Amino acid sequence: MKKVVLILILIGFTAVFAFADNFILRNGTQHAFFSVYLSDSTIDDWEEDLLDRNQVIRPGGSLRIQLVEYTGNPMDILVIDEDGDTYTIHNRRIRVGETITITYADMD
Image (tube, rainbow, N blue to C red):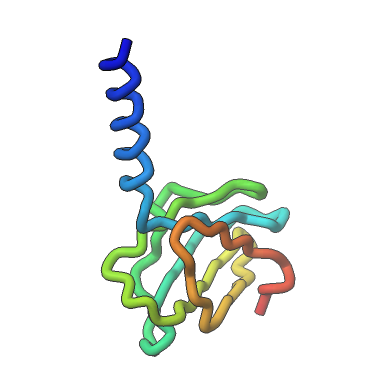
């Protein structure tokens, strides 16, 4: 029994560390998101689209984003919805594990 408990604890720690450098982007609108871009605020160019070609974030849905080589600088987030409307958040310091919800207040 002790071995089973120890294994479950180790699996739990592994899961925590697997998501340790992620945050969640949530769709708080009534429109599907077709493109998501994340870029360091000190860079004038958007990186590649984080969504796969056939991937969308439905209303109320979310996307787990891994912070690869995150410097701790503020980030810019750009989202494009099904109608081509854009939503932008500028100079946001992202905390690991947090959920950022895109709403109509973020629409450009």
